[in-house]
Length: 114
Image 1 (tube, rainbow, N blue to C red):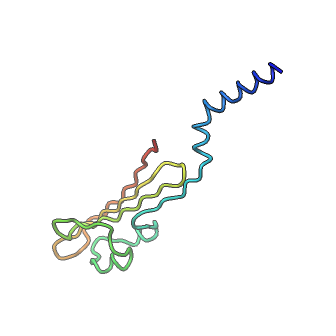
Image 2: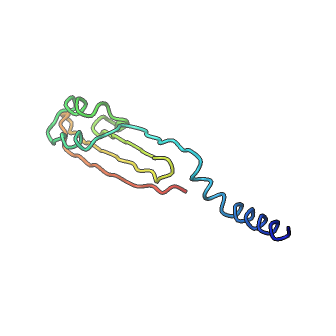
Image 3: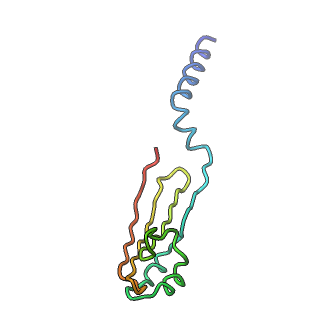
């Protein structure tokens, strides 16, 4: 009888000590997608010299524009699948004063979950 009680106590203590970290993985966390979803095929269609209208036709309207003018557009897509680390893709497009695309910068960063 004492052996069963001692075993049950050890198991209960073990569950309490490790339960928090494993319980976190059992709880459902939905995938969270925010911003402009960009495929590599759409981004590869962009070429320097395109007009703003051509870019909007390919990618849609940008998530953010330069607040001091409309010469820089930001397409931001953030994805956090369940318990995995979050990734952020930021596509920065720069136009000249005539509305012609002059610069394309596509950056992907990984952010650790705490």
